[in-house]
Image 1: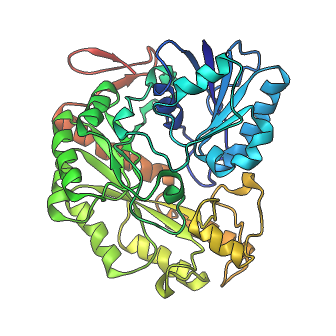
Image 2: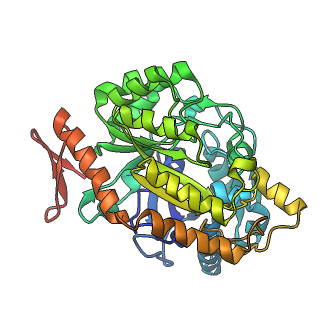
Length: 428
């Protein structure tokens, strides 16, 4: 059987440098398909969709809300041509009722251990309209090494610079942050993968630079310590969401190759100041992730124009390496969405605007237009003296120094499209 996995294009965040990372969801999903299935993958960010595809079955893998309108368009065109289309992924789950008219089937939940049944139904002409495994999670040990062989890796280099590969060491999240959909999608129970399985996957990736995409690594102290100890000999350089603010764990993370972290910053407290300093004291760089327009996180994070200006000043004062500003966006499945619906504060359900740089709700302390102006102000002020490109270049200079120090640095040969090290050539 031939299948095609399609990953639709979405509008990028304003002010963010234009680059494309190898997508995570499609390669993880591909690993859940039977070994005898022939897979073709199309990422519309880097190549065009071939609507004359000869696949027996089209899978639409959809991660983001702002991606779903384009995914519907692609699916409609394939179905006009007689193809069977199945939707899956985060956004398909968040928008499954709207997706049903565009799909022959919608798969809700995690795919491991379940795709053999779906494909059997398809072969037998008994494909179900909905496969609902929401809140029914497979054994985490069923998660295999992602099928990165379906990627054209040459399409994911930025100006000749090797970007990061995405890996997850766990699913679920015991935290319940108000803007996040993870409790709805992946559950509140922390579900770590066996560390041996994570190491096996990391070892299979020729790329030395990794993004651990777990919602938070700081969910189980002993697991986090064990993971970092086991990762250290691999000498990978990695990015992650928050690490536990604990001296022993930070030390282990640094020894395991922690490059930089994404740290949420919602206020100007000494707690944030000290946390950023502790990261940097351990040689771990920090990219702040700052949501503007908050009015549901207590008085200190209740954003008006003045507080946003003070927050940007604070970010410059604590010497963040990078900052990514977004606007609070009430995604389906999040607790903030439920609250704003009750308060009649949602002003747009145009999912193409749910890009985290458009005001789609009514803020309490300013107009939507003013909130978008403050978004512009934050980006332009933070990067006024040192541009995004320069700061990003500094991040990569940092990782190059670390790689050269431990002998893992490999140059990229643009002409021959290869990376090579001191001992052997390695295809990128």
